[in-house]
Length: 331
Image (cartoon, rainbow, N blue to C red; front, side, top):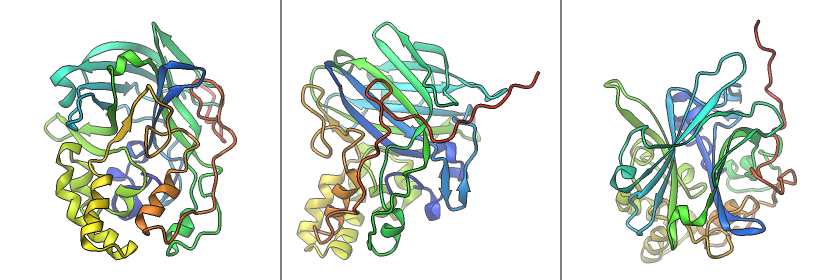
């Protein structure tokens, strides 16, 4: 699995599937390398604990969905894209996108410069895209592009090639922006979801960038999911211990390898082709195989599952959902 089910006991943060961050992708726009595609996926259509389908409401109106961008390699955000959603009424929902630059991007809040307002959320198979200036925006249900033999992962890495996600959906937030919007060099990206705390302020309940490690390597889940990449060194010893145990690494080598996984950010240079884990992540990169090779010290190299075939050749690139969630409006 990727970052799906990162809550307690393979559940959802705060028991709410809409808050569950699943995957982050970043790659140059096909055919137009002067632009970049950023995709944050949340809300799996099916749960593990409890098992079964999740709510048809795509995004939580009481939540904040955020993409963080670090432009100077200190694991502190210099740019933030923040998305809020309206209430889900009569089978419809809209989104507002803000951008924040400078020191405020590292903070917690739902303000910023409005980029897109009133963007319709896609509930059915048709992708509803909003364009404002040089920014394109999409939010809604999509076919989950992540591929993995989940049952094999749970069965002591005994893989059979059964793709758990082949018929699953997810909610995507996709952005197309000019590379100049990201700065002039390599950046680091991560995503997070937040909800209102008892005092009214925003509380981070989920975050991540690199697939699988938050689900498999993290013991202190609450501390990790509520933490910041700049503080991830505190998890180095726990990661190293897990790698020693699972991969048979020496202590020194386990510490070195753990250091390649932290901080939990996705490095991306829009001037170069994307390929995980070296640069960004495309929708067809086999990120789980990459992680399994690290986890097992190459004793296991693949789960025998490949990319999905329903991806689109144009924005938002993520395929249409397997299930339409369009409902008749009450009149």
